[in-house]
Structure formats: structure tokens, C-alpha cells
Length: 359
Image (cartoon, rainbow, N blue to C red):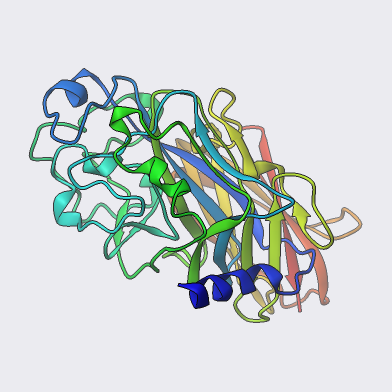
């Protein structure tokens, strides 16, 4: 065990630089429990009506991998609720190691746990809008059927599981702290996970199942209280091996302050439900062709794509009819000089800008 701790701590001592491999922190409202979930089957413990299951994702640039979420002497890592964390007592655990075969039993799918990409054994966790709709779990106990519009796509339609081989979680220095997510229904463990000297990590590094979107699930939390966190994360460029540390507050040295690593459900600033669209670029840096993955949460609309140089000149512009879900656009960069450009996307008055590097 001592050797393992030294190995993971080496992540946090690696030389870092101020770059931007972390694009966003996204919180998805995965499910909201109703009276049916609380009363039909109590095998997994009492699930309070109105409990919200949140999934937390890191949105990374392509070619980046997630290495660890950590607390150290300068930065607390904290996950908190004003009530209790829910964990299913039947199959519950502190990391999602249970088989998908158990996901059709009572409320196993609503466990609270920490992750480095998985939602259960042999399955990545993905936002429901990116689910392929294959092998959707049909619950045998008649629960998890709520279709509250605040959760978007119902679990009975797309469950946010995608078959694959996600990395396992390595826990370092948080054996006591992580117990807060196990058998929490009796309220004896308290409502706070906190560490200033520990982490949950991916020894081999974790990327999302879609290399262009590259969203990595790092936690799922179910609670009927106000949910909040402040996180610090380490990622690495898988091509250059450059390591980047992002912190919620008080950056030291080459650490990058990233305010979205702070979250409070009473404001919901980073909620996926508050986003009208998301975009991903690949490859970036690019040579001759840039591909843009566009995901709209609206049933239809028009998006304007503009490629802009450092002086603010619009080099190309196009309007695209969009539908709910994923679509792709391609930009020809072959006539452009090497350097930095910006892709600006505007839909329904919401504007987002991504940096593009041509080399």
C-alpha cells in the first residue's frame, strides 16, 4: 500500500505548465426520485422523495487524460450536502464496481460514488444525450421511471451507460473519508467528504469514450439536500506528457485557477441542463482540416459558425440548421498560416468561443 501511495503522489509532484486542457466542468441532473422510488422497493434503503442524482464530468480537450482529483496542503477537496448522501445498501459501494446486471434491481443506479470514467463494471458513464440507446436498463422493480422534465431524457429511454473498458479507481489516503458514500442511509457517516492529503486517481489515465468530446465522469452523487463541491484536478497531455493542475481557489506556482471546479446546486451554474449546446474540436492543434462536433439540446434551430483571426477578422462564416443531438462540421484550414485562431459559435443568442491552433 505504501508503494501505491508514493506512485500516485508522484502525479502531483510532476512539473506542470499553465495551459488549457480542461475546457469545462459539467454537472448533469441524471435523475430526480419520486414517491414510487421511495416506497415500491426499500431493499436498498430509504431514498427520500425529491432526491437528485448528479453526475460530474470533466470536459477535456482531445488527447488529454484525467489523472487525479485531489486535496493537498494548499487546497481542500470537498464534496458536501446539507442532508445525506444516498448509497444503495444492497449493492452500494464507494466506486462503481458493480455489474450492469445489477442495475435493474431497486435503486442501484442511483448510488453515490467516485469514479475515473466508469458508471459500473465494463461501462463508461456518459451524459444521457450521448447515450447510444443500446441495452438500456429496464428496471425489474418498477422504479426509476420518473420523467421529470428537469432531468431531460428519462432513464427508461437512455440510461447514460456505454459499454467499454473504463479505468479502475485508485484511492490514496481517503480510506476513512470515502466511507461517507457507503451505507449512508442511516445518517451515521455525516454529509461531507473532505481531504487535504488524498486523491482518487486513474493510474493509467482516463479519457472519455468519445475522443472528440472527451468527457470523463468523475463522480455521481445522490442527495435530497443542497449539493456542492470544490475540486482540484490533474490532467495530462497524452502526446506531449505535459501535466496540468487545476484548482478551485488559491493557485500556487503553475497551477491554473478554474472557477468551474466550484459548484453549488442552489445556483446550478455548471448544470448541463442550463447549456443550450456544447462544441468539441478535433484535431486541435490542426493541420489542414478541423472537425467540429456540435451538440444541441434544442429540437431545432440555427447556429452560426465563424472562424476568426487574432485581429478579429472573420475569415469564414456559415449558418447551419441544427436538430437536437450531435452533428458535425468541417473547416478547411489548408490556406491559413500557422498560428492561433478562434471558432465562434452562436445559437439562440448564446455564444461560445474555442481557441484553434493551426500548425
